[in-house]
Length: 272
Ligand SMILES: NC(=O)c1ccc[n+]([C@@H]2O[C@H](COP(=O)([O-])OP(=O)(O)OC[C@H]3O[C@@H](n4cnc5c(N)ncnc54)[C@H](O)[C@@H]3O)[C@@H](O)[C@H]2O)c1
Image (cartoon, rainbow, N blue to C red; front, side):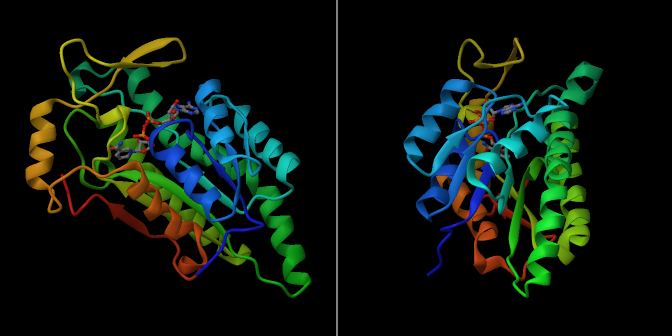
């Protein structure tokens, strides 16, 4: 049995899908949760579903000034920051010859630069707090979980940008586990296989699209690929956002206090 009571978590991209399931799961275990999303309404909905322990701070994590504002708002609202989950993300796919510079760089910005800036924004408070706690003779373990993908660990055709961002965040994870071990912060990554969210909805007729900074970006997966996933995945199905959140919960809980710098693949055994 463990509790996350008196812990404060910050979850990016928590208005929908896996991020929302992570935010709700952490709250169910007792954590206060600052819910971030690009879109205001979904962020507010997640915070409202959490109730008294939830708050929202909407905004774009790729805006260079935003990560510090998000960290400061979390500290102002809850007075602490114990768990950071860098989850916000989307896909913008194409074969390399059709991938523009803007498209490739957008994938690095959301999946790698934004997590870097959020951790850098939190570093001052984390260092000072850990030093104070050490002087008082207490050890409090804090948690960072960066979200990656089997596209990052295995590669995936049509995802040069996405897979590079998702591989890059593994390097960030391993380096931060070494920089922040002395502050009792475990830094790990969870890489998903195929989880049922709007990013993996079957493409049918008109392509589904998401709105990112005023631009419509097609998302979804060809039905033939989804059929292949069911055959290739040892568990024979896609995962649910709740199953994805449970893997993240492990790295946010005391059960993983002596695990750092690792990548856990939550994909029903699927590899590309
Ligand atoms: N669904 C899968 O199969 C799968 C597989 C591997 C990895 N992932 C990763 O899991 C994470 C969550 O994806 P999901 O499937 O739940 O997608 P989703 O689209 O359901 O949710 C992602 C959320 O992130 C938000 N977001 C996007 N850009 C943002 C920005 N700039 N600032 C703040 N918020 C932003 C979106 O508004 C959305 O609410 C992503 O990092 C994704 O790459 C998903």
